[in-house]
Length: 430
Image (cartoon, rainbow, N blue to C red; front, side):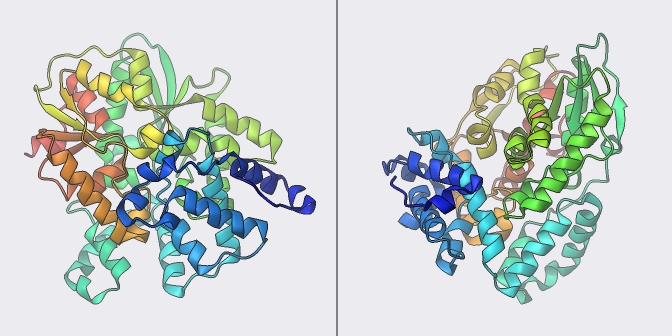
């Protein structure tokens, strides 16, 4: 792609990098066929190629974001399917992230949109506050028809029940069972502590059973992805910086063999921590060390080599590969292979590369598109005739479970069950 930045503009390291990304694009259009919003809406501007043109125009002319540009950038799920498809290696992830930062700095959103985004950014990363907000949402559900569309969407996503806070989410160290082979830290997440505390419990049992000492470290909180994808770069950096410093302090002289993540969206964010600190060369190096040690639970489980205990039932599992897993982290074979080794029959749905519509906070900010994508994905999962759905991301679990008649569980819960742990609660209740 030809660009026309001035020498003065090119002196800005950030614009210099975005120019490099833009010039990588060759207009081939391969990305269009795998972009969920283009497949759904059929609008060129709701495809990666169309958004690249909007970003190029905004940057070259050094102008504030327009309503039109914001509309189509906001509709991007950041599923990164386009990057898997692109033959030219266009770094769309960092291009769209930087475009969102510019939107945040130059565009004044309508008041209702600003309030919603402020609420989401303030509440979801804080487990205690998030729990209370869900209790409040239950009280408002009988009156949901009186609320605007975005509030209705939030109320629709409210879980039917909340588990009590799990004791495993408090800072502590869980010793390895038997001979210790690894020392790891677990990112226990923010919203996941409230929406799915069973996942962290299963993850810790799975890891300690296979020789890992697991630390839940004080001072570690939200990974920063939620604010990062809303263009709130400074807030995202602050969260990342706090996490890095907390892990460094807890690691001591021996260090951690891995930072284990069981929410694939968080894993994608952690593995990209170095890019978040571009220009801060000293801290970028520290961020790179954390990024280099980050492993999804499926990756670490594959390294450990699971020994199934034969407790799990012989069930057919439809595996939903979260976008942040398959496109963000390029983890595709390990979860399926682990489930098969654990004794499950695994089936993958049609259009497995397309997003379910969760995409972090996307189902709160773009509910109409999100629910259409959810129903499309649920239809393909139902066609597998599986007994259960497994996935590696809490957002996908919450998005899909109300659209399906079968349980949706985390991959770690099934692997824990198969290797001697308890039957996942959602299966036991059935």
